[in-house]
Image (cartoon, rainbow over all chains, first blue to last red; front, side, top):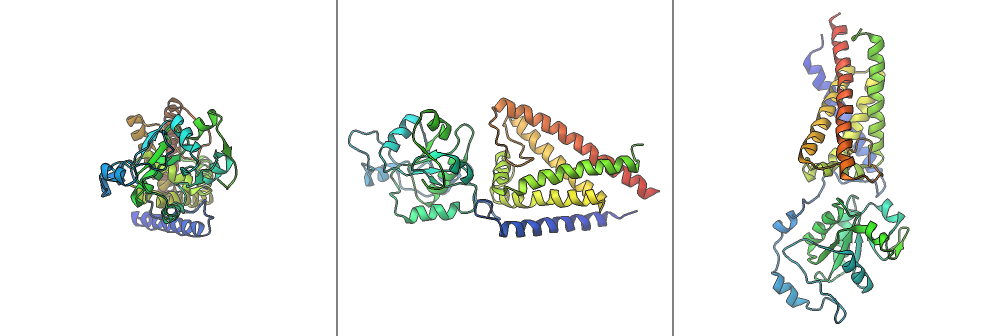
Length: 197
Length: 148
């Protein structure tokens, strides 16, 4: 009869092979399939608790107009929260300003199939998202100006996860299009296909 | 009858095929599987990616070993443990009333309502219990063969 030790040895062997195969497969995977070994997925609200922020009043005083046209609805920064949910009407209004960045948190393959015209791909599940967030910050984008983030609406949490990442690097006016891309399509608003915004 | 080699070999093939196919589907899209694991809300964020990378390969390697009849008791035990983990994870979310896609065969492209997802979770638990019985049959049969 086999000893229990042989089970542990064989199980360790299987696990070792699984780690080895995963390491090799991940090393040769393309950008869309690659994963960092250590995940950095903030739970909703965790970033807000961790970050030290100026007060809302101080932030609003720095950027009173936020680049909005005269008479347009204001979207003041919210340094105490990673994101705020906004409606489809607000998103249409912000899109019309042409100066508000739109970030798509869905997978790149889904982005290629169709996205909000002008939106940039920021798939929160792909390995290069942290680099994209850092590069976005390095572009010198106004950290208090509105940024619209969206995913597929409904129970989709990708936009909230991307908002947490943006908040951690200093963006404190991230607005989440809560009904997401399906609502945009339903409204008949402009969409683009392919890799380019 | 329950411990016959004829039956055990067929059970081995069914269980192995299931895990190899499920593992390969997940290997094809690790970020998608990481997303599904994260949705369960049971694994700390730091471990989600490592789990998404290793678990599918463990399924495939163990499944292939079972198919070839190599270390089949160990392979059946590992697959049994995995099935228990899957059943517990789904049951916790079912008890929470939180609908999740099982992620068993990678990312589902079908849009489902919450009610449909909750119903699917119950069916997946039943299926996993059935697969667990197959793993138990292999362990029972191979134990008897070892004694003989």
